[in-house]
Structures are given as C-alpha cells and as structure tokens.
Image (cartoon, rainbow, N blue to C red):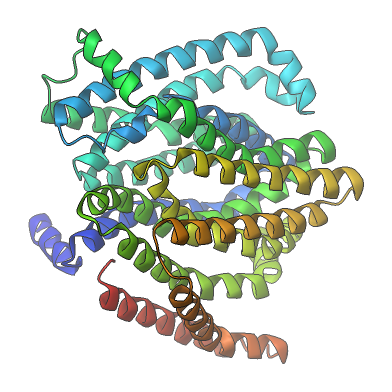
Length: 486
C-alpha cells in the first residue's frame, strides 16, 4: 500500500529535473511550514508580543553568528568536479565550525551581561548559553546540507525541513508553561534536527574521503577557496546583519514588545515566500554552477527572474490590501498592529523573493566584492530605517516604511547589476516585468473590488479568492512550461 502511494506521488512530480528537485525541496519545506503557520494562531494566544520579541532578539544574534560558523566554506562544497576535493572541503568546514563555536562560547561567558544590557533584554541573560550550542548544530547542518545539494540528495533535505518545523512547534506549544524559554528551546531543536540524518547519508556515499588526517589537502583547499572566508563571509555577514540588526536595534530603542510585532509580521510574510524561494535558490545554485561551465548562465538567470516575479507579485498585492484585517482575525486583537507592519513590508519582501535566488551567481562568477557592496547597502538600509524611524520619530511604523523603501531600491539595483554583468539587455526583462504586473492586476482585481466596495459577503469573497488563486496557479504553470525551468 505504501509503495503504491509513493509511486502515485512520484508520478505527480514534474519530469523536468530542475522542476522535480524544486518540487521535492519545496514539498518538504511546505509541509513543515504548514505546521508552523497552523500553529501560529495558537502561539500568539499562548505568548505575548514581549515573549516573541525575546525570541526575535535571540534569533537575531544567532542569525548573525551562523553566517560565520564555517566561514562560508560550505558554499564551496558543490563547486569542485572531484568528490574527493569536495569531501576535503567538508572536513575543513567542520573544523571551522568547531573553532567558531568555541570562540562564541568564550565571548558569551565573558560579555553576556554587557550584551543583554546593550540590547535592553535582561530576561535573555539566563538563556545565552543556548547560543554556542545552537551555533554548533546549525553550522554542522549547513555543511552536510551543501553536500546533499552537491549530490542532489534533495529528498533527505526535504525530510529534515519537515522534521525541523514539526519538532519546533511541538516544543513551543507543549512547553508554553515554561514561559519564553520554550520558544527558544523550540527554535534550537528545530534548526538542528536532521544533522545526524544528513551526516549519515554523506558518510555512506563517500566514507573514505572524510579524513581529518589529510592536513596538506585541507590546507590547500583552505587556500584555494580563501575568497569565501575573506570576501563571501563578509557579504553573508552583511546580508544577515541587514535582516537581523533591525530587530536588535528596535529592541534597544523601542523595547521587545515592538520587536515581537515586527518579528511576527516578518515571519508570516517570509515563511510562505521561503517555501518556494529557498527551494529554488538551493537547486538553482547547483544548476547555475553547471550552466556557468556550459555557457548558459545568463539564460537561466533571466528565466528564473521571470518565474519568481510571476509567482510572487499576486500574493504580494493581496497581502498589502488585506494584511491588517487578516492579522486581527487570525492572531487576535493584540496583533492588529503587526498586520499594518506587514502591509509596509510587502515591497521589501517581494523584492527579496524575486532577486535573492538570482544572487547565487556571485560566488559562481567570482564576483564576491560586488556581492559584498550590495549586502552592505542592504544592511545600511535597515540601520538607517531604525535610526530615522525609531530614534528620531519614535515610531515603529515609520521605521518599517523607510526600511522597506530603501531595501526595495537596493534589490532593484542589484538585479540590474546582475543583468548587466551577464550581458542581458534590460529591455526584454522590463517588458516581461510589465506583463507580470498586468497579470497580477488581472488576478487580484476581483478581490480588491469587493474590498473597496465594502462587500462583506464571506462566501462571495472566498469564491473570488478561490478563482483568483486558480488563475494564479494556472499562470505560473503555463509560464513555467514555456521557459522549462521549473
């Protein structure tokens, strides 16, 4: 019975290899995110905005540190033609993770009091010991995840994504009596589940290549891919700081309650987009490396941009229109302001969704410096938004609006830069973008019309929403087949 069900499920997957890989990754991620989304209304009634703010500060610190866990050497794992050389990079990455974890533990022990005082979060002090533990587990997971990407073992990654979400929700809901520590523990376990599974799979494939005794080869690999720690690490650190610094700065200036509202809005918008966006990004990174060797990278990037725009634009418009009402209904009266914040985040999140997967080409074409400059610009956008909005206007909403506007402009500049570097003429992408905007308006127009005329017939609105969703999916499928990338 189970084998028959698996065969039927396999027949539903696309025939195209790229699309099949994306479907597997997106399926595992989507299943996990459905659990997280379904649990969110429960969590917002069990925990206060202040509790979520504490989680956001912890996640922000960990998010910044996780970038340097292996000094970005894991990004080099899919690149070598030889599996033996790639396995040497795996060992190098694991050694680096151990060293950075040790340094982080010492820093937390020495400067923990100063950190929580600076961030205006004294309640976080008893839980700072979780940061080096989480950093080690996340770093090891990243290393073996990129080996799985290299070997196209996408089903294993999909399984771990589902297990991560499930374990996180179980701990956060089941341990609510413990207070905000349950949110933190759930995050720790959720981000690290699957390490053993991916590691076991990697050692089964190439058991003889993972030797810590080959120090000469490890040193050679460290020198050959030195641009990853010297340049790409700073680009990644800037990227992470760009997304994680705003909550940290908001906590220091407006308190953890404001950060809780900000983090919920960001999570609700980012999670659905990451279901497809992260899966496409992971698969495209492997495909782009091969396309670069074969001379077809520009064509693949252009196709990727078009399909991401078509996928992301209609839901983005719908969120901008309906977010406040949806947040009030789904999460409770305490979280209505989070819906207003989500509305202003839409341009930023949509630009991130469309452009970020395309930026995976920077390390492939050896443009680490360009990537770093744009990441610094994104980071500065977040800092400027908080400084002007929170410190000068003392308004969370103004901060979010400024951050969203500045980040959107940086992402657009980044996309134009990618097209120019790859020799893509801007006229064709601009025309296709206008077509996507037209399709987007046509799809969401029925729902917006009902909202503008204050028609409150629930069945009618749901019916129009269903029709719009079907139209959107059909448009995505039709265009996907025409470009043969997803």
